[in-house]
Length: 290
Length: 135
Image (cartoon, rainbow over all chains, first blue to last red; front, side, top):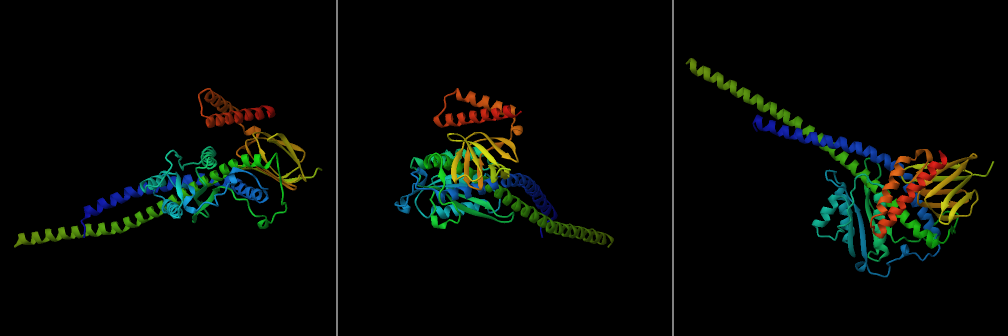
């Protein structure tokens, strides 16, 4: 059995770590509250935006727009594909980063000429270490997403796409389904795909585009992407805080459990030492009497 | 009582208004555009400017920025980055933003930066305009 002092110092270090995990738990729960509020406020817009764009894609006549440029003729290996991956700036968030990175790796291994656009330090460092092609000028943080940041990301993506550097752009992010469950998702950003008419259930097969479909699409698509990216960033940020909160809660709990069992061990060790001392003193006294 | 239609006005950071409406006028690409109930289905763009809509004979005003408008005969959906009531506009902040953007315009900027800054100036000017008109 370890001696009492060793157990004492072990308990001290666990207590110190517990202070940190507990503080992180409190911080992320406060941040989550804020993030969830902004998520709730953004959600109607995000949903309506997706519905609207779906509606529009269903109705759209044959538009000669660059955003619809398909890369169908090219083989998978020849396509240049951009993945926009959202990870956290920090670790200690359970499996949050791991899940996103795993999904990204899976997609990258499908082939093609891949470029990565990573938000968040953890993902960036991981992919750079792995020797993947990561766009180094693409530096955005995952904390507290703003519409302005979403806009500049959307502009970068659109520029790369319209100039022909990328044939396809996907975004990989984490969606918060309930507070207990999050799921990694992948969405195709560009090119847009006009939907088939037979899939639709809505009543208006044709809509007027004012002034012309081309001009409307030209303005609408960047706006749509900006909104979409903003929604995705907010969604990921909430998931991150949620994951961190759960992880830190679990860490604090297991620290408490460890302390409890160590406390028991410590008391036993102390008791044993006292007993031994008493025995020594008693036997010493007896020896003197004789 | 005029015929009404459903309108949904959503800003990216909050739902602005949902309900019945008699008429809506918003800034489009080629100038202002008014929509009444029974309008033909249409998709168009929202430009930054002043939007107004009538509910029970009362006009409501708001400063909007770029966005999307989808119109069907009984339903109109307006999606915009930001939508603000005149009373919510912070005049001081808008003025500061305008000054800051104008100062930036005097420096040498890339084409993209120039457009972004111009857009910022327009937004600030629009806010101030809407605020002035309704106070």
